[in-house]
Length: 154
Image (cartoon, rainbow, N blue to C red; front, top):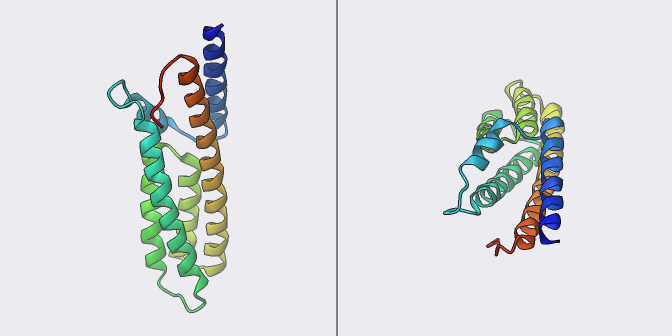
């Protein structure tokens, strides 16, 4: 009976990941990240993704603050924040977040305030969708390991 629960949870994890890849939410960099995890670092992916979320929250907060100032005109500063977000999103395989950041950066390069405001809205939407899906994935993984009798140190 224990094996059936583990198998069912693994199938749920596989379905969720397949859906995220099919939707373009994740790309091959996420698979590469998973390959770096092993018995010596069982929470590697979880830890890296959480660092990404912490740092992304700061970048999004900074972007929001910059764009709230109606007198703001330093679009290069927005570009710098977006470059960081593009790079970190690429490194974890957050494809859709990366792609919408690139579009947002294009608006910043044109000093297009309405385009930047819309870009921020889209980036925040994609970011929160990714965060929710990763939370669901990590919950399933934790349940799978518990069902297998493994203490999951998250």
